[in-house]
Length: 384
Image 1 (cartoon, one colour):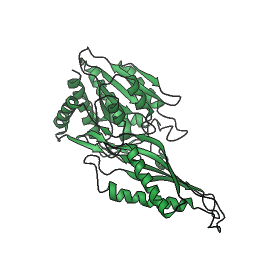
Image 2 (spheres, rainbow, N blue to C red):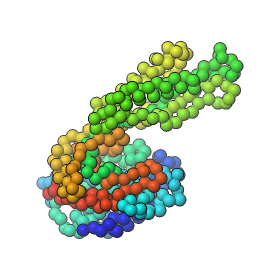
Image 3 (tube, rainbow, N blue to C red):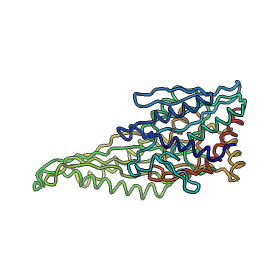
Image 4 (cartoon, rainbow, N blue to C red):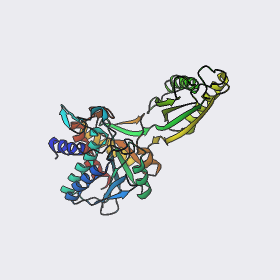
């Protein structure tokens, strides 16, 4: 059985390799170097992996441990990219331990879980466990950006059950999560001299009316009507720009927002709510002009066809952790939706972590050890 030092050493080596997302942080190196390190690990283990190129910046690292035939296949997913680390650049790539926490960029999101896949497959290979079903290795790029890695993977591979490994308390099985949209709300004004109120239309003042009503919707629609699993629908502002100088009426204002989508909804539900706001503002300011551009929209996730995998996973969680397995939702989005929508019966599971996308990101060492044991048992029973 694995000892904690083996886990700590492997996760630490992955943390040391900068794989910050090159779409999210222009000029960042992207995932390739950490994927090459993982590929070399698998090569020494006798597992063949290869790159599926997506574009000049992104590739997925994939592989397959073939079974003897007649069994169910299982895809093990983790993503290899991280967010940026400007707020803790001296420490982010220098892993350290505080109690049960292994701290470093990507520890929980998602390099600790990539290591869990690596170490669980090490045990399968070294123990010479014979399986009938295939184990598919799926180490994708760009989860923190546009998810082009997961999108390409599901196009090229035959659907089978999938475990998406992302940070969560060890006994929680994710069966649902919100979708989201990144939207640009644009308001037009009319530039004029600051003293020419009869000619100027203040785009920023008009946008302020829009923002007030977006926040009203958050209070009256989202906070009062949470999803039973996924909680309150996400809404926050992200960016704003407008105007040219102090002395001139601003002729434009652009607001960037992130907004959630619950199961049973699409991004069109949110667009309709915003267009209703536009009509309200136009009643106050007849010269109001507003529009919405969709930068990215992703559907929500609802697990389907996962009964056999869920039963095995829940039993092994309870056996190894002595905690009752609980089906949960998330208010954040993940690549699970892309797998499920492509026909992969998908569940989410992981080890607990914290400070994701922030300084001093951590993962629980003890839960990561338990997760590896759970994965080994699930693989053996599901792919038998």
